[in-house]
Image (cartoon, rainbow, N blue to C red; front, side, top):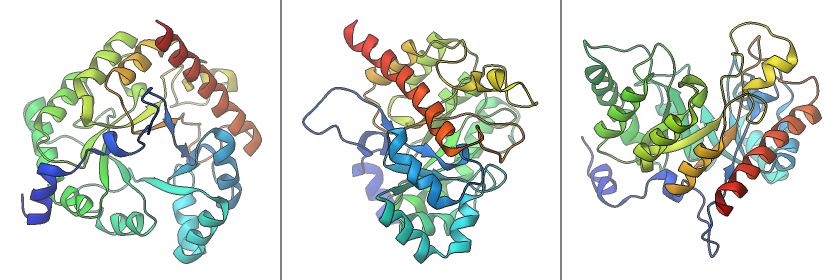
Length: 303
């Protein structure tokens, strides 16, 4: 790995999941929520920022098309105006999600995120190259080293979502990923939706990942998101609406003292629309799931 500064950070730099939101004097585990702008479809960015604190957060995750268009809105406004808008609303741009960008394509987005003081870029592992799962994961990790070096030198972490038809799709591939990472500012952005819907298995995976877990999407499979469903079935992706028991998962997050962001999430069909017809209803839906996660946490704390 090139770069003296990066080599030094590999020895001394804190992992993002350990440093994102210190609990201060209160050592109890608690969630550090971030709101995905994509949940609001293509609503004006200013109106989405007005909802973030109502949803229990002060930090936003910005997505481009086809999952909303708020990254494009930032460019249309101009970055100076977008920065002023965030400051006016008292909201931090913490993360940018860019599944459209792969290895070697993230440097310009790292620059943008750094300008805003953000800490995390989420992207995907693309299609695997290699004859075995471990070789596929190793090849992917190697392909990301230059981007991770650039990110680390800007104090930014790159989180890779587990997703079907990529190098990170099975629990074993995720464990290989954690094993093969030997440098900081790189880890897993876990999407339980894309894993077997077994809460104990997901919990076990979380404890195995430990500090390599840098982002957590509170998102379950429910009835899926690949075809148009009645709204009550589509919303079963949201924690507390579907059948996935999050209590063991929350217990595992508490066990590893996970301090990265938690994003309550689902995909609407078609992509790019809001999950409800108004911003108020989107926020209410997020808060419904947030209440559920907090009940799970209270149950874990009292057990």
